[in-house]
Length: 221
Image 1 (cartoon, rainbow, N blue to C red):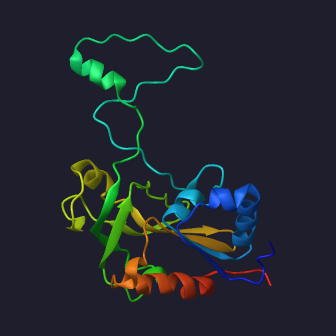
Image 2: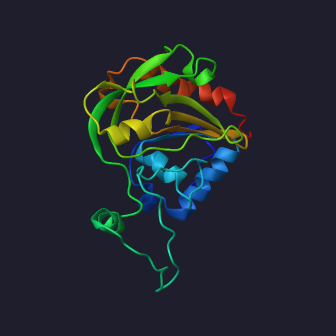
Image 3: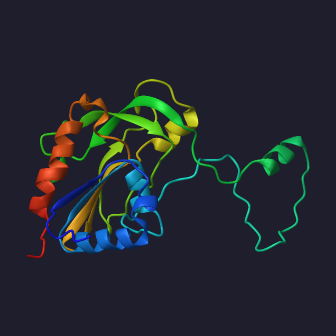
């Protein structure tokens, strides 16, 4: 599809691997590099950050574990191990890499970078809904900016209940990511910023993503 007539494209949460495929991803990447603004939300951010798409330089995290992950063997043979007690047996049968526990829905406190144009008019702290089990590593400064992030583990929960492991791991992880790409950019929300349209501050942040972002891009004419 020819996307040259568009300045901003919003991808709501959804299954884009199925609907866009590799060709659609490359088309979007080319459009962004020529000055387009791509906004991804929740599962769309997961798709954009996947290795075979490569629109975002962040990765989803596996759940934290108390034990070091054992190196995997190649092919049909693995390294020999010894198990000395029952706890060792229980550790041995656990999945070594699992995603964090699923969160049904809680309100969290999000800290906001006050010096970025994406957060103009937004308070230093906002409240966001968290559902699912997506936790992302922060983006490196060489690739972009973490514009908003979840507060520390002692402050992150505004209302609701989550397991301590999720609370610990989600602290200081990104909620809003800005990544320049060529003449354009990708703006990624790791959770839904428009839930029921009732969370103050997120509406301003989202409008900035749509209207201010296009003023900071340099599309080819």
